[in-house]
Image (tube, rainbow, N blue to C red; front, side, top):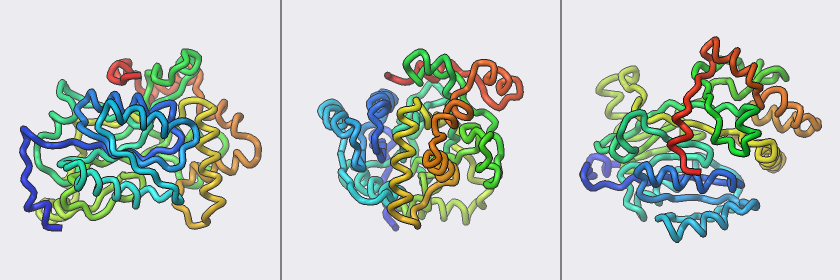
Length: 304
């Protein structure tokens, strides 16, 4: 616990490590690693949870090109526990000074002329970054690459938990949590999908300045590609179905529970067409009311 206060941070010589938990992410994991390496990440700790689509083989290939520590995990999905374990490996084995807690479908893009590492050349405890869903539209799907999507959800719709069960609701347009970058020295715990972190340094900052004084880290934003094709969407929901059938106590958001229910009813393709894949005319309406925003620069920062 005291290692945060004892840890020496050298802004001219520090290590930025990214942790990623993956399961069947063959369509996106290589782009994720290549992009973040170019943006300044020194090394990766990646846990593979029984992938069957070639993800594990891709990681093995990339480990010859990048500094990657691969952890094979065959247990029942436990995101918060596993991500804390990966942060510990990043700290102890890869000597991390900062850890970005990532998912395979998320890209951390600096909002200035600096790269990720240059933006993190200071000692801190927990940084909280905005996260945005990217919209899958007809043109990007037809182009053959979801990375051609140009729109993200700028002002999400505040659906209630009850409304999320409505078959006319597009969950992609709903509010999603931010993500954290943590100093592994003094890290106490990570919550859920790495949306919050408990850190001895953050506790100290909160006591000194008050919770409301701790603001978002504006210079880095996270762009999230949750649904990239029907095949990837169906595979994800099948994996979620196995989790729910394997344990009644598994932690899972209401949107995934809804999608599993829809899958069991044989209506997942209909859900994809009606509420996930957007027509250009629908995009224009959403853009008019500032729900979605166009940004063609995002795809230029991603190596795919």
